[in-house]
Length: 340
Image (cartoon, rainbow, N blue to C red; front, side):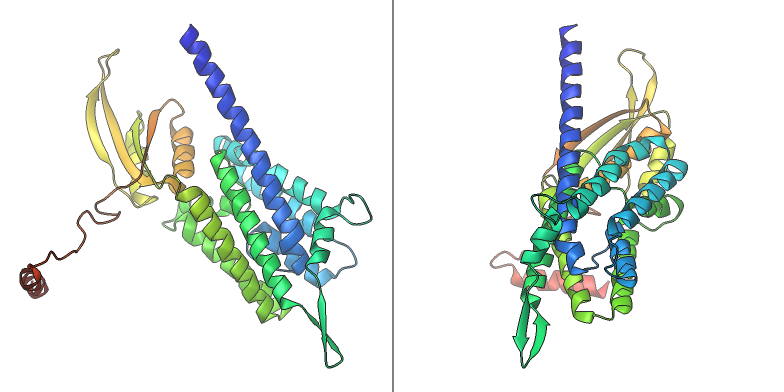
């Protein structure tokens, strides 16, 4: 009884902690976009870039970036619910709503004056330089704003991931494409973001600003990589499920990895069971968990963090180092291999 209560308490703590992280990550992500990315008309990919492009054509008469963001997020949330299911959607719904809400707060609501927090900070990074009687925008401040914004956006995304959440947006499209084709989420996400950046450069006819937007997106990706992915690079997972064949097919076809099938006997039931052992990178963890929850909510799954995995599909087990005095032998082996 005590153990059950402690487990329930730990579960509630994890849920509260995850909610807090998603709220914090969404606020940080929205602040980076509202204060540093959007005011500079930078297209860096994602839902916000659609709003920036539309705002460019409408002009500054009425700010509508947040309105477009709301519309896109809600539409993609509906797509997620219809095509990806309730369980997957529940992982994204909190950040999907919080992100545009925080963005509108920073983008519109005046604080201590006539301008919003985002606009106030953006004004500090907007400066003109006069040369030869002509005013030029201070490009250095635009680049600095892009770097800070990219770092904040990346940090916000990483924090949401730590809270076992997702920021939604075009991630839904990437997952949907992966479910119905052999294209991985990372590839489709890159194609979508790159397309938006190219469209932004063509529409705005501003190549330097487009390059700055790409720089901001790279900073964002680096922050996510080092803040989240590299914390625990790899995961070893054991799955006990009656739908093990379907899960094994998903691992091989969608994750492009393989599994080890272990025959086991249940200690209580005495029934024969199959255990699937899978090794993958941590960035694949969320989608894998969501898929298992969809096909078999009663599956028993354990995850173990691994600091290093060697072998096929990962880093090689043996590095090609040549020991002193073995140079000639190594050359002969290489020649034999080439001959084969």
